Image (tube, rainbow, N blue to C red; front, top):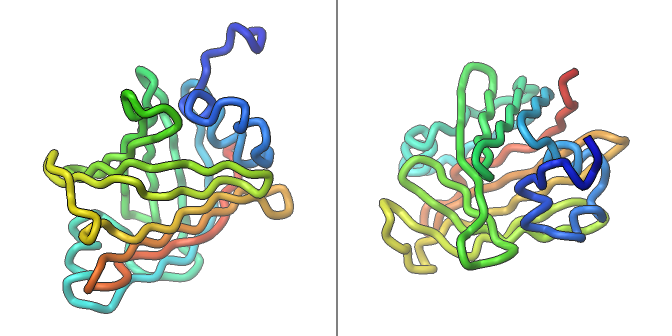
Length: 184
């Protein structure tokens, strides 16, 4: 299949020509038109506030740990991607897609929560900025938005990630970082 015949993947559509500036390991994870799987390890930290522990559990975030085995499977269907992350025996899934009428933006849905994300590509990788949040279909006021740090980079030819999610007044829900290698 020629490059012109190949379906344009979600991140290629959203990022346009800037996609080609991403480091190869980041491109590879985001440029499969049907399915990609990767495995690795990560470190997971959880917040200490009792409400943070409760909410992290309700969202399905993994428990704290070092050297946690991680498997990520991304499946594309109908222009969207289903991300399944398996932290040991804990599974966290989300759905990503383009935001209608807002070029260059992605949404990511976790259960009843939907987040609008501005992906920012560079030669170093991708960073993500939260630009909208909804719960049960209702927009959340900005002061209730989670504080999200998301980064994807390449180091020594491997895909690396760093994700942190905190809530106002409660603090850290979860932070996880590590590396992945594409499965054969």
